[in-house]
Length: 30
Image (cartoon, rainbow, N blue to C red; front, side, top):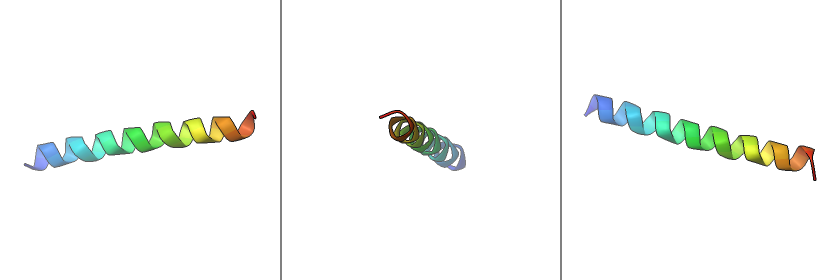
């Protein structure tokens, strides 16, 4: 259970990071 939870958190973090990166890039270069 612990391992699964850790994997989920990592995936969510990766998704959030990608989303933020795309947002920042979009704002920097309109």
